[in-house]
Picture 1 (spheres, rainbow, N blue to C red):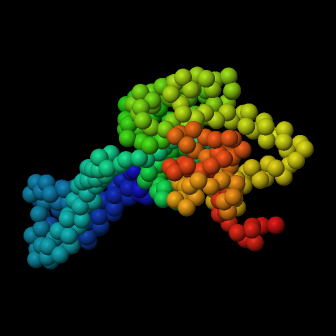
Picture 2: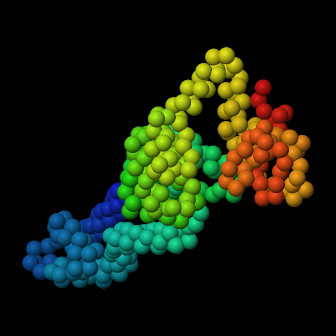
Length: 334
């Protein structure tokens, strides 16, 4: 669970330095009034004896071989040494208590999240594809950062995801226990975006076994591996290399088309492809006559393009894929 804190090493170093400062403060105070202390050996109190006395006093050991005998020394012990002893113990014991308390608090937060999280999205891999998928998810209305879980083996990638407020799980998504920690069995969607196609196939198999009802969307580099992802249980497969190649080919003749496609695929600005349910007043009509630019109709889980015969008339229960205006035209950069 993301939380902004200083590193444990920095915290420990600060506490150790504080304890040393308290110790030397006690040594200095005792040394200034060393004539007010009595050593059991009767040979006076040296600087080493002052260090020894301060150490055993602050640690509450107190062997009694060196003790304050004058009123001034005893007053100093009451007013100064005792508060230093308390602060010394707070610093040392507080380090252990803080670690134990933080671990318990973190465990409780994780357990509470696991018990309450439902219909979240698990993103496997936080590379270029995974980051873009997360950005698109967060741009949708109603999607919060605590509804996105990132699974990766790269700690730097997880740190970047945690900085965005996302929940992270360190481990290989090919292992079922790692996916269980991410709550994949209760997720509404699993986005699989690793760097290797064989990893994508194995993760898809594992995720489908744990989450038979979740929507699994996977990315592969080579088109020849699409059928493997489909057989493994992926609902949608995106071929990243071929998609990029098509855009490059289009750009050689009509480069502005690439800009328009990028605009449609970016949900934060300009135009975006969206989906909405059919309104009651729209049933029976043609999607071509709607104010929205309709691209297709989703009926019983099947997509029909707007020029298909099945899309001539809108039926109750259909959903429309349309072009949504996100940013007014006058607000776009020219």
